[in-house]
Length: 184
Image (tube, rainbow, N blue to C red; front, side, top):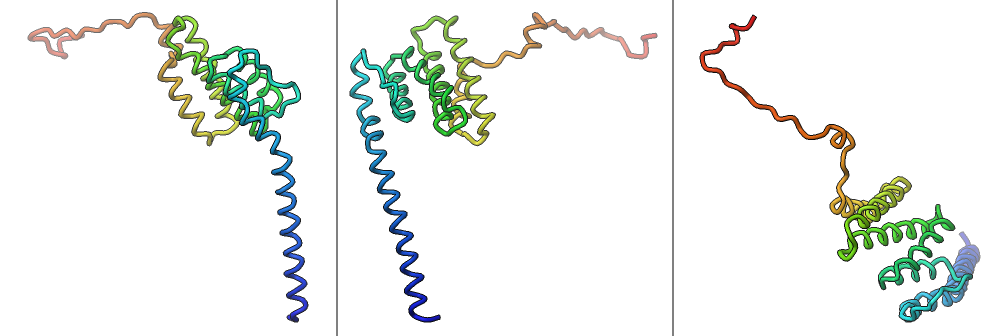
């Protein structure tokens, strides 16, 4: 191989790497606005009247919903998360939204200040969300662990156990001097 061929190959390779690095720099620059919006979310959440912009990026909305849920503003967080799950259903961001929505329901369900009649349905919704998430992605260990956590708080009740009624008592009777041969 001639030296000029090697130099040509190397220069084409270097040009490709330069184009790739320029593309990455452009993506980083274009995502700076999103990164700044996400880092500003905790400061904005402290303002009780905060409403995210309608044209906000889905990642910003997910960060906002997570911060709202952690901050105790459950209704606002639930609204945003349900909206995100509906919009981004089969994307990684949609799965993250579904996971956060299930976590939101589980967090509300295990709160101690709610009566038991209100906590059980929330935990059941969380369990169903985790199951839906595991059905689409069986390798999601975070969802699996959280489903087990939800099952510990609200165990499944088998339907046949509910239909049986109280258990029947059985007693073994021992009769002295009785042999099995004595029966007809």
